[in-house]
Amino acid sequence: MVRLWLIVVVAAVAFTVWAAIDCATMPRQRVRSLSRGVWILLVIVLPVVGGVLWLLLGRAPAGPAPVARYRGPEDDPDFLGGGTTPPGRSRTDKDQDDATLRDLEDQFHDRDDDGSPNG
Image 1 (cartoon, rainbow, N blue to C red):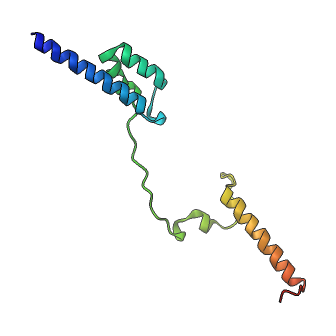
Image 2 (image 1 turned 45 degrees about the vertical axis):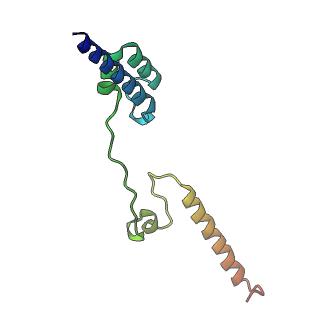
Image 3 (image 1 turned 90 degrees about the horizontal axis):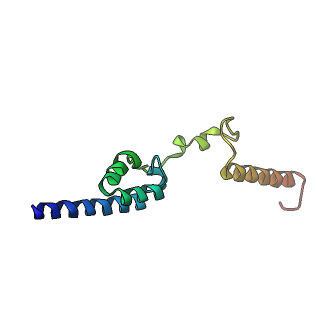
């Protein structure tokens, strides 16, 4: 009977340590309901119950990992969209760079049209 209790206590301690480490290393986006510090405290103060609560209520399921894949120009909405920004989307650094490049090209062509000695 003593061996059985010893095995149960060792299993409870191992589960509590695992739950505390899992909670401490979980990305912030996957921690639900309470803050990470409160969950760690709960797991340590209520050894087995806190670990079970962490698994059931605090740990969000992992979503599918985003797969990086090549998008050709025909699949790129920025490439196909032209120079206007859609009403629901704000300007990005790429849009600003494109606008600056267009302005510089216009200045270059205006300078050539004025008859400068460049050629």
